[in-house]
Amino acid sequence: MPWLSMAFNTAVHESTKATPDTLFLGREMGSPLEARWDLSSVGSGQVNRTDREFWSQAYQNLKQASRKVALRYNRGRKPHCFTVGNTVSYRLNLVSSKAREVSVKIMLRWSEPVVIAREIRPNVVMLANPSTGVVVRRAHVSQLKSCVL
Image (tube, rainbow, N blue to C red; front, top):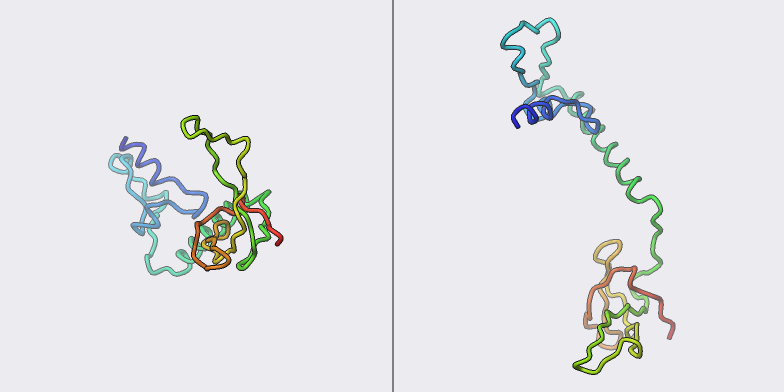
């Protein structure tokens, strides 16, 4: 396990274009080979912690990698058309019960009209009763449909 940890910490990562040792310690980690052989001619690997150019470049590389992941994650997604104040219905979670003599086949699948009170996240909203303004529940936008009164 120590060899795996050392390999991870001394490998140049694609997102930062630097090793974790360089980023966290400001220098490269010494390897067991350096104890046996003189590898000073290969390069010192020392990074000045105050070197703003190095740190800003590592930060820019990390932001670029984050944007790439976001693009890959959001590919194929489409924005929703719901805004605060819209009247919508949400999908009900229906469960049949023989004991209560309830069948999903004859139950309503959508709720009564509610109003979007506020947006919690880009895909989650708080729903409120349109007459009282009391928050009823929160719902994912995929569980909503527009309701025309």
